[in-house]
Structure formats: C-alpha cells, structure tokens
Amino acid sequence: VQLQASGGGLVQPGGSLRLSCAASGFSFSNTYMSWYRQAPGKDRELVADSTAGGSTIYGDSVRGRFTISRDNAQRTLYLQMTRLKPEDTAVYYCNANQGGQGYWGQGTQVTVSS
Image (cartoon, rainbow, N blue to C red; front, side):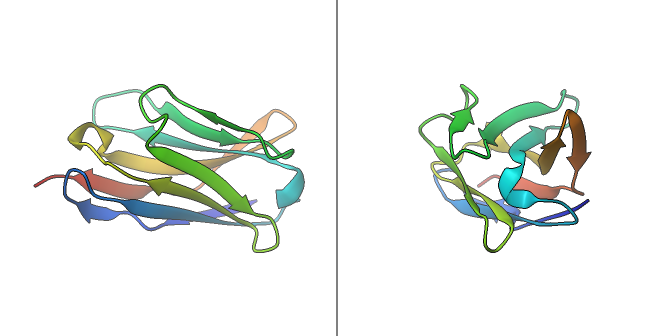
C-alpha cells in the first residue's frame, strides 16, 4: 500500500487549497478512505471520510468548508479546502482502511497565515 499526499502550502486566511492523495497497491475503489490532520502539539484529528459506496462524513470543525471526493479511475483522493482559517494549519494525511488495518501516507503541510 502506498499513499502519496500533495498540494499543501502557504495560504492566506479565507483562501483555498486542494489536496490530492495518489494511491497504489490496493483496491482503491473498494476502500474506505480518510483525511486526517495533526497540528503541532495536538492529537491527530479526523477531517473527513469517503466510503467505498460514495458517502462522505466530516468533522465538525470543517463541515461546510471542506469537501472530500475520490476519482476511482485515477485512484486519487481529494480534499478541497475553502474559507481556510489559521486553526486549519496542520500536516494533512490520507488514510486507507483495509479490513480494519489503517495505512498512512507521508503527509503534506498546510499553513494558513497572513
């Protein structure tokens, strides 16, 4: 299983970013995928889930601002982030849940600052 996250960077408050997670080594279309984030000094936090059936679930802090999506043909998970806030600053990780076993990518840094 390999997960390669990209798309992070520095953005001003109120701005937008789109993260991507390229997946390989497993059946992507049948896998429960998630985005997590971890800010300095804090625990890793669930941002959003994408089920194999196409349902989505969001954490309270991002609901209405972030959108998780997936392209099964391209084996890629996305996170569209809008109206970013300084408290969204964190390393963002994608996660693949294969039968209860979680796999992590290397993370991509998102910094929201003026």
